[in-house]
Image 1: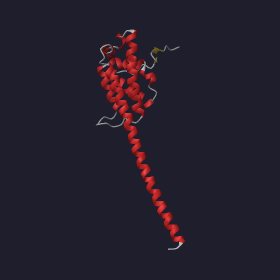
Image 2: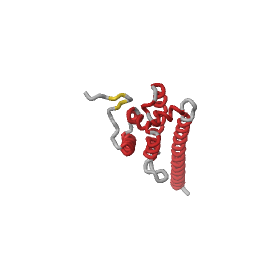
Image 3: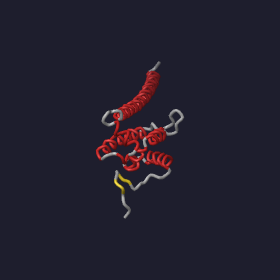
Image 4: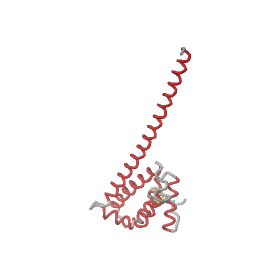
Length: 172
């Protein structure tokens, strides 16, 4: 074997080794992506569990129940506490939505739609929170469209968009 053939063989072996390393790196990147997605879901589930853990707190539980049934029945202090909990829930929901965890899930077309339908049916005060405050910090137009459609279906009317961060805007 002369030097040219040896150089060609060396280049061929180097090319195969480089390809093998590239394939290995792609596999590692895919695994890292799956791990990061799983971490997002674990974090979101932990956050939701912590949020709902507050609803059984002896001090806050009655406020959660009262606000869930009738947002307008809350005192100023109770409303502030209820708003913080609803904001936390909606922020977690929004992160999940933006992370792409909205797709088909066990026969459900929209996880957000199913969750909101369930929560707002049993806790219409959450829907009042959404209309008056939550819609103002729902910045993703696709997420807002889903929530608006649930509101329309449950309450038979469009969301009153004159509310902005809890203040009713008056037309001039």
